[in-house]
Image 1 (cartoon, helix red, strand yellow):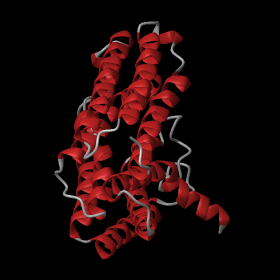
Image 2 (cartoon, helix red, strand yellow):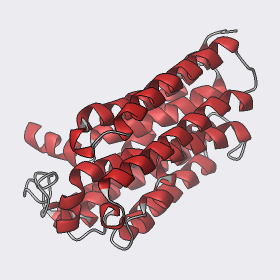
Image 3 (cartoon, helix red, strand yellow):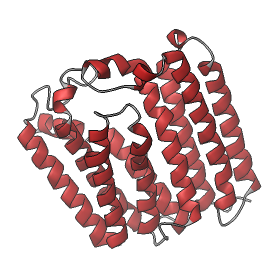
Length: 289
């Protein structure tokens, strides 16, 4: 039983699903300005839905995962769970997550969740086998959870505040994924995926990643302009975070790719996003001026 639970947690990529849940919670707090029991309902709903989407993705890509060292130990290619059982788990999670979103928060958050399933599992997952630039439209998947949280707390889905925060998350996704290509691009090629390192040599790709990093930074610095209240302390904190972030990647981007500390770079870009979202949460929970 314990081993099967571990297998299911791996199948639903629980760490990724927790990150998606955190993003949705951030959107909820930004609009609501407080924490109540509804956040737990949102967290459960989004985590289950995200887990189902991740499990479905593993079903879709199991034969490719079996060809790569990075992914061959995942539950399906390693034989820990059959493809049929994994598909059942994924569909149960997806339907449960959509039902809970609808039951607790209404039709709009549920439709946004359904849209993300369509965009990730039907569009992006298949587009990855066609073009190395699939990550650009695919990055929309990372922006939708914050809208789910925002609308779950009563916000309008196309409010400029949440749209711009979603834009930040959308832009952030691209360099995040292309950093993976610098390290695992050859494995993806051998598995049959077209990768950006075929079209762009690694040195130039690092410069492209840097350009996306700068764009991510500019988008986050502009976000305070779209908030209902503008805080000088918040703006200073965001500005300092971005200066640190850009300086780090300036040093990384103009050196030799062979000398790139991939682990440090990947951790840095994730920590940057996490700290930024924490700042947004703190700003909306505390009376900071």
